[in-house]
Length: 353
Image 1: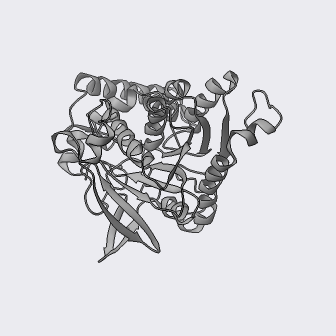
Image 2: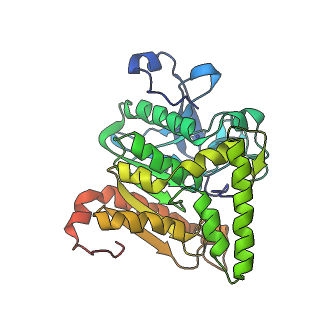
Image 3: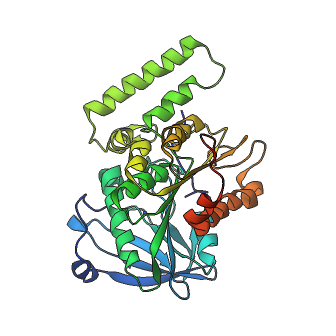
């Protein structure tokens, strides 16, 4: 079974309490800047309780522009890493291309205690620092994202009114949870995202393919046994399953993006590869099948033959880069068009839009 991961190509803790007041938070903010290619990002460090950092990067366009928050996939890769003195590269390829456009302020939050360079293992956490695994789980991660988002909303070059959150793989679960937590999020896009809790992804994968029912039952029994171990020790960050700690899995198993999106009023954009082996598209279909009949503004882009990274069958990420990049550009175009563009089209009942 593969780890549920966004990978490096699609590749940021605060306690789960209300964010501090603007005055109190501003007193602790430290800023610096980095350059990635021709683009400059402001790095903002908010500090946090018990020495846990909340660090994020925000592009600074000319004039006031709408805000886009990227949430990366699993693992502990930093959003940016230094390639040579004073020059940085991003582990989130579409972040930099969108930030290069002058019509949005684009941000990404580092997960707490990430290393300075991408570790081996891609989206797995087995090679992550001890401090990362000790602290990482969904609720405090979403609290950190919320704190960073509220700080970014106060910056003078961010236009109030509409905010897009793009979540990739594991980040899609966090994006849905953030949309439920913060009503300022008006638009949310899930790329290769789970519908119910992530356990469902493993169940759906067990039923996929051409194996026998006996093989499927054996796979389900293995899932049940592993779930029982995680459930018996849900806060253990030293024990691992499928490349991540029990603490991480227990929090993501409990989180349903269907329920979180139902609590949010945000418009929804879904995009998934129909050959995704990490998060089977049937998991994402649960979001559409539950929310489309309720009249929610939801669009689902299903890509035939594409995998978890949206790479078409028979290709690789490098050769497919323009095509994959176009999928992220389509998300931003959908955001820019706004709800009025959707309401101007004829209603399509229960079909995808």
